Amino acid sequence: MPALLRLRPELIATAALGLPLVGSHLARMMIGVTDTLMIGRTGVEPLAALVLANSYFHILTMLGSGYGLVVLGLIAAARARGDDVEARRVTRMALWLSLIHSLAVAPLFWWSGAILTALGQEPQIAALGQDYLRIMAWAMPATLFGMVLNSFLAALGRANMVLAITVAALPLNAGLNWVLIFGKLGLPPLGVTGAALASASVIWVQVGALAACAALLPVARRYHLFLRLWRADWTAFRAVLAMGLPIGLTLVAESGMFTGANVMMGWFGAVPLAAHGIALQITAVTFMVHLGISNAATIRVGSAHGAGDADGLRDAALAAVVLSAALALVPVFLFIVAPGPLIAVYLNPADPNGPAILVLAAALMLYAALFQMVDAMQVIALGLLRGVQDTRVPMMLAIVSYWLVGLPAGWLLAFPLGLGPAGLWLGLLVGLSCAAAALMARFWGRGRTGWRAGAVPGGPLASGARRG
View 1 (tube, rainbow, N blue to C red):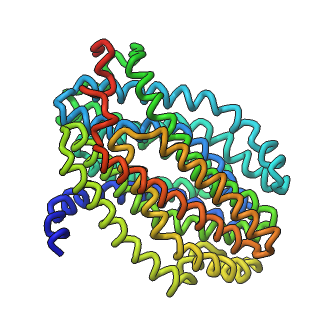
View 2: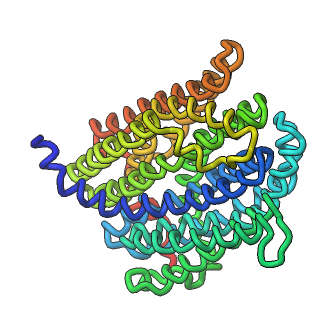
């Protein structure tokens, strides 16, 4: 109890910063949920195609998202030192790297159908997935720019603006989906293609609003973020690349485990894949809560790290762990007691496959309840480590946990040992548990030797020329 009283100010500060971030992540996730709900009304095959396509898009997004995420801690640390120039430099080069990544992965979108077919997916589902992904390729730059600008505004204490913009996009996306998926207002029904057109349009509208905030809000205006944006700053470019790429690869390792599970679930057929996709999206919604707290932890820990405040850093870390663990108990209860109503909203009552999907998805939700706590702890640990600018070793720990432990365990349990879809989810639990233990050990192990040990005096750009 005395420890909680000591942490109370930090708990309040983390919650105040984290709740708008949680809200923005949930609102962003709800755009995908809306797509899935509406496509689910058109049939099992379009739903299965959307599950695969979203996983494909997600993993390529995660690979490039490290540049947006790394600036959370870098800006927080720079502001703690009173260094506005460094905050501007890293944000600009994160935008550059986001564009480069988008161009580099564009061919993977164009030929996605052949790739999905080669991974063992049914040809008609792969073809529908490719229709979606070829359009979403145009949304990749906006998606990554949005992540960078989200981080910039959140680190400046304006996460509420990010939340407002994301929430405003929800009705716009739903309206466009209604028109384009089902063919309203005189337009033909476009199904999966319509969902892609709606999502891509909304993402670009969002990033335009975020850019306006980053340029015009009083707290942001002094950074002159877009002034001479075309000028290269190679010192900042290399620093953001060196720290951001490992974050992206870490996220790919985790996302890749889930995407690998999606691919293997597809080997069981469209019904198991649809059930898996629904259960996975429900758990992804709850995960957004912990992701928002993790982002807040990066900012709080990054600020203490930049100021050289070891006690403040420790308290910020403990507050994030306590807050996330408490919030994880709610979905555990819901997944065990009432999975049916959560699943039913995704299904068309007239679909003859609906009852089979409902039964299987409800069984998978019990496994999802088991990994809520470890999933929360692994993402919190990653947020804490980013706050102290530790990204390379966590990348290796994640790769081992997800690819060398979790995914093989899922395959072994599902196929050779005959547990089927449940075996894949048990493998996810094994991988996430391994990651949570290893990453938490890494962070608190560094704490025993001093978090300042790995810091570069004056910040990561101190050795470079001061560029505007």
